[in-house]
Amino acid sequence: MGNGTNLGRVRGLGSAKHGGKHWIDQRLTAVGNLLLTSWLVLSLLLLPNFEHETVAAWLAQPSVAVPMILMLVSIFWHVRLGLQVLIEDYVHDDGNKFAALTLLNFYVIGAAAFGIFMVAKHAFTGVPA
Image 1: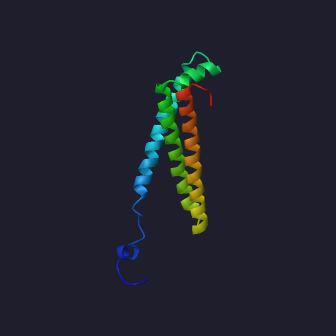
Image 2: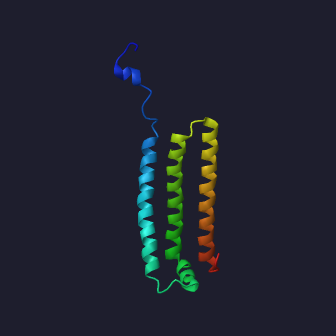
């Protein structure tokens, strides 16, 4: 086995020192997602109908557009955190891992930016996206 104590043999095999922040970020985004999606469902249920004009007027309000944008950011950040863990755990080749994480980052940034743009365009112009 080798010389030294049990503790000495396992030194250097512990935490990478960044998992704690990642774990907390994932839990915080989960709570944010729960609150914001609950707000979305309740807000939609309070609308008199779901006709395009009604929903468009609802989305054009700043008090609706801002939480929608926050929800998009929170959801896509949460998706990125979760899929990053999945990729890091199950993709073992460093090149494939780098490619998968790069594609993941491009996807979540692009999708979130597109969603934010659509909400902002509608909120600022009142024109359906």
